[in-house]
Image (cartoon, rainbow, N blue to C red; front, side, top):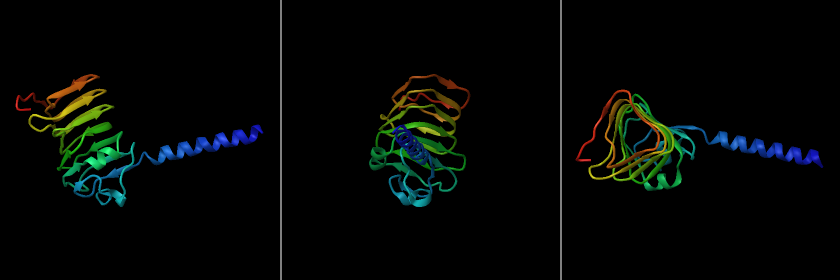
Length: 173
């Protein structure tokens, strides 16, 4: 009796470990347009919640974080790597795990971006649209280089660390 229970617990543990590991993939942007289109991602498959989404020189085209993508995928790790020169624009409210912005532009637009982990700007630009956008950083916000123009409503529930780059408080924003 105890051997059967032990074997069942072992199988459940392995199944949980395997499914968790399967959702920690890296998906690279290789298209243009809406992020909810599978053909715009490596292997032509959409990311899963918990995955890392990467923007690099594979495609430098603009990306829209559209309503379908935002409602289906949360807790993503966002990496915008050197080589990406496009613009990622929120087209809906979005929640991410963490992010590293090293190139390109991340435009919060008039929506709300919630980052539950550290957001590091090491190049590129993070901005909002005139008179709009809300940014909630539930951990640290680190500006090493690049440009950061906060949203009208920006809250940082960790530390603001400004080690370099340009922080602009613009009354037009």
